[in-house]
Image 1 (cartoon, each protein chain N blue to C red):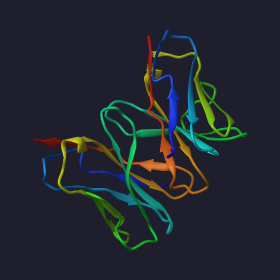
Image 2: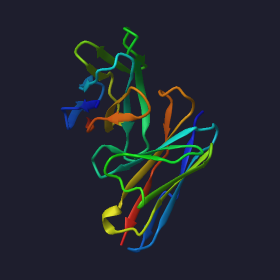
Image 3: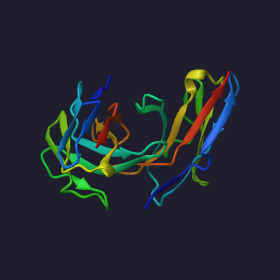
Length: 116
Length: 112
């Protein structure tokens, strides 16, 4: 199989604090991981593309200093929401690509972030 | 830039009946992939079916099949013998390179 996990599955934090979300490919190596944001009953919005060992590529309008992405190994990427505010509350989903074949993208179960 | 359009915000189908979800896309590329993903209430994204643009034959996965019309840039999903477990949000997606581009989604309700 191709399993992707995310931790935590949900988190509540106070405004102004930072939150880290982990995305792991459990049974394969992922050279590329993607981070999405999804509001209720809306589509997935790509935030950034993360390549192992290099800087993430952010989509237009996504603040790179606010959403820090680190792809430290072939099985782990992290998203840190810095100085979180209530408007950052959302559902964050990661996906991992198994190989250069861009058809093989596998999704994590998502993380619900609530900022009070 | 590539775009994906799903014009049906919501659809309903009676259990055991057939339903078709619509999707159109816009691209200038000739080689790409198209996907249908299912997102149930758990919010886990599940790949339903995929189609390579260079293949003329429509993809089929059990009760799920697509009608891929490359010239019309249309990629509809047909669900046969609908089941209660098919109720979910369905996303059409395009990939021509590094990333997936998603449509707005269609909520499918299945009536018993």
